[in-house]
Amino acid sequence: MAVWDRWLRGGDSLVLTPTEWKALMDEAFSPLLERELGLSYLGSYFWAGPWEDHRRRMVRVFLINQSSGTLQWGWAFDFAPHLSGKRLAWHRTDRSARQDVWEVSPDFVKSTGQARDRVTFSAWGRDRKAILREHRRAILALLPLSRRYYAGTARPEALLRSMETALEDPYVRFTQGTQLTISAAFLAAALGRTEHGRELLAHLNISEQYQETRRLLTEQLDRQPRLWPEKGETGDDPDHR
Image (tube, rainbow, N blue to C red; front, side):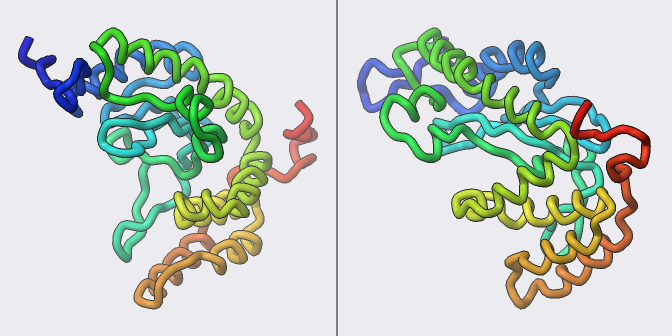
């Protein structure tokens, strides 16, 4: 087929088009993500679960470049806005889906050589079967990490602690600092800790021309209702179930 007749660097390596690559990732990742995490493919490198308790699980391809990547896993919130220019917008539909917080494998960030290679995948290889095997190998290495992350952040309090710890990491601040700060602030408010949310927003790195946006965020934060009770209010400690 002509669709497979693209060759890389004149050698015996096949490189997939973006459309071909997305189709292959759907084939390689979707069955496992559905079975292990309850996620469905939304297209455009994105898998998501249903909304539950104001959150949904999401996995996305972290693109290193246009032909290689790894997986990033995290959460989306139905109460946290994101910045759209100088306005606030929300991402509650499949079409507008995006992650409010996410992480990648430590091997992808801190390792080199084989350790990093085992958690990455690419759109090129000897043939399509070889490319598919590489993707399946990577997801089998990444699934245990994502399961452990979701188990450790299932409770809103634990998720907020995880997000604040992540914000101390320079790599995390560089890759997702703005949205992560906004999301942590709104999660704090949703836990009844509005003043703490204000403190988090005060550290948001926004240029002078976007100071009106900071005001809009603060006003929206002050209107955020509590979504989860404090420990003991229901006779149950949510961290010790």
